[in-house]
Image (tube, rainbow, N blue to C red):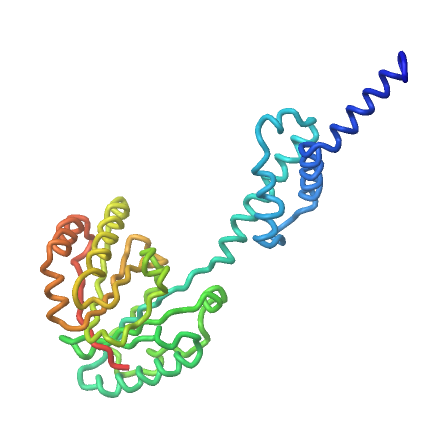
Length: 301
């Protein structure tokens, strides 16, 4: 048995060894290593999953009491690690989750050239389908009341969107004298969560497509977003509806494009006269920056 100073030193050594082997001490040592590693981090070179799971997540699990009991140099290292790694993890994760983009191209040609223009655009749509994994997501539409007007719907796949666009000759460049106005190309992102989750695509049952455009004042964007979600939910429950997508323009966040597909015109008109559709028009009417634009199309590709 140890007595006096030797006994006191032995007991202290035993307590120190037991403390060093405790889960909390192991965690502190692991976090110290994370803090030291963070000092060598520069730029955005850490993969999002490694940053968020291996480094950032353990740091976020540190309790305030545990941080307060840590030595000053450990607290400084942890704060530095969080300041450096948290923005990197968020940005890198956002880069990994690049969403698909939809592009609407409005093309208007001379009335006497609509036949030739339709053939050229159909061939262009066919060429585009050969370069994507989901051919059904390229759709060519022709307006019913003004058949000299066309709309090309293109889904840009994530890897294509992140790289700056598909290397294809624009359809409008193949039409020279036929055009009566420059093509209006609008790039969109999925706004409606249901449509994004379902990865909306063309439905072969749709005989009529409706394309609507809303220009909303910036202060009224949140109110319009809520009204659009209610309209989409009601439309998807309506007879004859096979598609209803709400898109938000990437360059103008207060501009929305609504794409819907219907089995027949009569079923669309029945929905347009419903309480849900009329309530929507009544809500957004005073908020519009330009007249409500809604056109009917048929698929011609």
